[in-house]
Length: 336
Image (cartoon, rainbow, N blue to C red):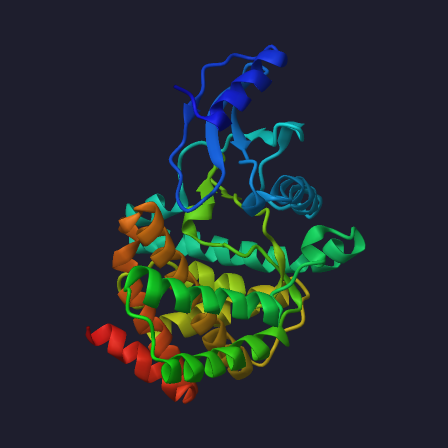
């Protein structure tokens, strides 16, 4: 029996005289559903949005941000057809080579080459910041402001301690943690100046038939700190902590790439500080997502990533020599 989303897609294909043979693609943490279809005798991908408040506005944002990225010559999928009433987008099919799997099966030299290309894409996205404002893209009207950043950190605290662990923090610990995480959010709000993909990691990059990296899942782009996508790429879902030296080398490479594109460069030490602040926020946000997905949607394959992410957060806080309550609470989780 087809799902409601698949039934909508079949209806759309019939109306447009296209084959109705579809195959559903594996989802991760997405609320959308993806299907491989045939469109105009060529393979294509159908993205179908649920009719719910969670996805409200995502259809329009997808079209808007895709136009922005294509206008900036960024490698995102071309859109072939849309249906606003049915919330369906038909777009280019990049194949099946997700960068995460490619990295897992590559030697060190190839991994470093792919990471270098991915870091270059982050800089190119940031170079599109003026275009986002010139075109009044939705991405220029959204930002990682205090409200958004602190909401994500509150989401972490709720869904890790209460939803997953079922061990809410004491009132005193909750207040002290909230106070320190609000500091993180406030400082990062002041650094939100460039276009960010928002979920830029190896599962949202693909290796195209031409051998070049392609960007997917870009519809949530917004203005953020220069370090946001870099943290996401380098520290998402790790099981072994990268060395500080390796991270420093990648930060320097990123800054040099920005310089070559004519972008304003921050001081290296200041950028390292921002990177660590963003590491705390982004990794705790990820833990919140992993906790929610594991506890409420049965996606327990996220659980092995939680402890390493806590270890990354702890190291960042220790390097900053700040946030003692966060350090204490995180140490307790790691030792359990």
